[in-house]
Image 1 (cartoon, one colour):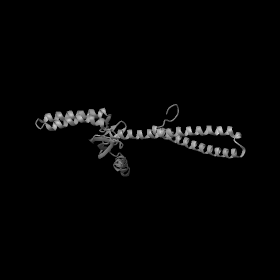
Image 2: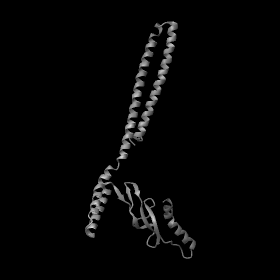
Image 3: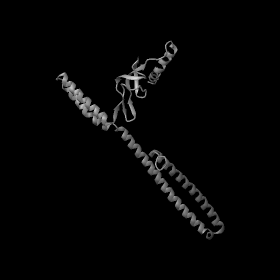
Image 4: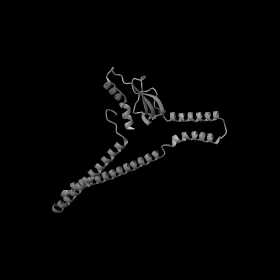
Length: 235
């Protein structure tokens, strides 16, 4: 919001400008039609009463017709300019979408090179292979960091169905709320957008109820698992 006014997107501004230009053309056409009707009426009057009485009115009509013609040409040029602008923006968007992966792929190619070198080196000890894999892993981590891709916090965190996908669950007396205790596959997100959830194992707190209250115990156990069941259902 700028100066107390809500901001609008470029597309909304373009649509509003095109609408305004169309309305201007329609207004010009209405004026042109009115001028033509006035001109026709003036000709009839001139034929009946003579031309001298209508010289002044005729000059005004000619001036209005010239103004209308100028406005029509301006409106047509404006519409053409906006149409060209819209087409150019669409072409740029299509090209940007088509080549969006150029920069990430350019960063990925050195990692591919190292993988190919590792495969080509058939001889070598297992330690050499481990060193090569660790180097490639470090390159991958650096690539993710450069592109602002972060890992999703998992083990030890409260289970969150928005970023965690429960693959297994168990009851535990060591937690007081659904908690992630094991990570099967790491999750990632780009800024605030989730790329993929973390696949995890979740520990549920044991039901705590007064002795002899079996119904209450069962109810609390069901409540503790609700969030996991809902997440499984959404998945």
